[in-house]
Structure formats: structure tokens, C-alpha cells
Length: 270
Image (cartoon, rainbow, N blue to C red; front, top):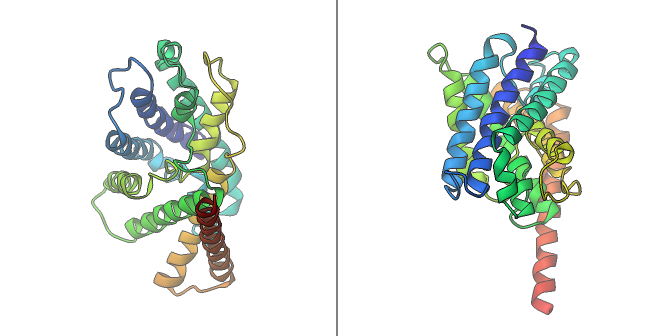
């Protein structure tokens, strides 16, 4: 099996199980309807774990462009492999989302809420505020990549790493996922969003492309910064990449803060 195919299959499994649990919770007349955020967070952790077990022996199971780019940025992954990994991840995510569509085929008709249908496939903010939403995705993915590097630095029993990574995803979902639904993975959002746009889902609305840049840019920035931060703080490699990404993250934090203050002032004066 090639690394491209391993990333495709691993990401496909991740999306089938991850998007699948959201469908079960959100769609009408599903036996899991209304099961809630805890179930979603746990199932996403298991989804990542099983995707990692599927691809790990071949490609080290990145399953996420933010991880691939972060590792490449600090020299832990060759740049010439990045296009194959990311293309495999995106294709796998689209295929996985299409499979979930067929799994829940009668339930699209039973569900009238257009936002719920989109929410099965794509992430969206609980409170729409683009600077704050971007920061949420940056922080979540920063913790993800930093956590992956922590895990990789420890000697664990053979085959245990994917299970620990799954627990990391559960922790991120429960602790940091509330504001945006924690994409923390550009293709986890983009692939299913493309599937939502092209599939003949009964009564669907638009695919909210105006928001789609947030779960792409945020995870990429957060993932690359997480890798540079680990390399700088734990390996002593404090280079230009660390300082540049630090400045970008600080600017994002300041912009989000002042945007929220502006909104508070507008609310108070209205």
C-alpha cells in the first residue's frame, strides 16, 4: 500500500465514524438523536484512533494537513511528500462523508432543519465571530500538534500510540470544542463540506462557504505553531519560524479581543 492510499483510507475511516456520530445525534428519527456533545467527543476520539490504526504502519497516520504541514515545518517530515499526503487526506474525507450520506439516507427526508444537515458535514461556530472563531481553531490545533509531539517523545507499548491520540482528541473536544465544533483538521471540514455541496440532500441549504476559510486557516496556523513551539521549547530550536508564527498568533489573539470589545460596546450602546 502506498502512503497516499494509507492516508486516504485512514482519513476516510476517521470521517465515516466522526461525521457518522454527528449524523446520528442530529438527524431526526435516528436512534442516537439528541445523545449530545459527550457522545460526539468520545466517538471522534475513537474515529481518529481507528483511522490511525488503519494507516499508521504505512504513513504514520497524519490524517490531517495541519499535522503534515506542522511536522514538515520543523523538519520531521519531507516536504516532497506533503502534496500526496494532503491530497489523499482530502479525497478520503470526501469519500467518507459520501458514505455517511448513504448510511443515513432516509433521515435526510425526516429532518427539516437545514443547519442540522449542514452541521452533520461541516463545523460551524456557536457564536459567529470570525476573529474569535479563528483563534478557537488555532488554539485547538496548537494543542493537538503539541500533544502529538509529546506523545511521540515518550516510549509507549507497541501499538498504544493511536489509543492515546484518540484520548487527546476526546480531551480537545470536551474542553475546547464548544465554540466552533473543533475542526482542528482542514480536510475534516473541507471534504465533508464539498460532499454537502454536491450531494442531492433533500431540503439542504447552502454550504456556508463564507465560514469555510476558518477551519482551514485556523488549523494550519495552529498546527504549524504547535510544531514550532515544541521544537523551540523542548528541543532548543528557536528559529525564524517560531518567531514569525508567534507574531501571527499574537496578532490573531489581539484582533479577536478588540473585535469582541467592539461588539460589547455596540451592544451596550444599542
